[in-house]
Length: 127
Image 1 (cartoon, one colour):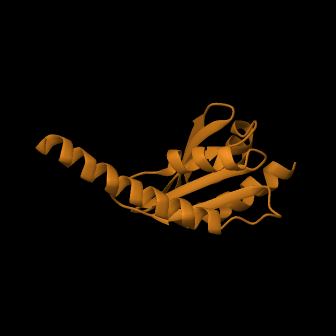
Image 2 (tube, helix red, strand yellow):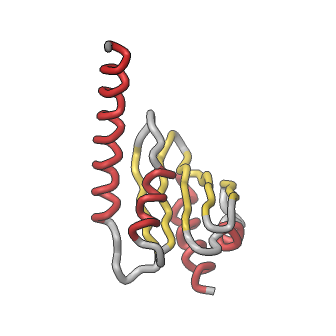
């Protein structure tokens, strides 16, 4: 049907975007780091939670941070064992906010504070 064809075309666009981003994220993995941090620009569609979930499944011992730049913000999905307290401490002094479940969180950080946030996060993770 025309409606079915419309849905199928839309699904294929999302699938191609997701697979492309997932390939890029996999290529950015540093095997020596406890954190997988991947950021991307996408104004229209958010795939952060889907990418974070897939990478967590593939790398269960790592902490996953996926960030999508939208305007002046990085909107992030974080996954990892007991990361909420780490996130809360890493956000101190940062122009941003976040929270969520113990092993799955979200955060929003201004572009100008992203590097400082990642630095804080790594320090808190190692404490």
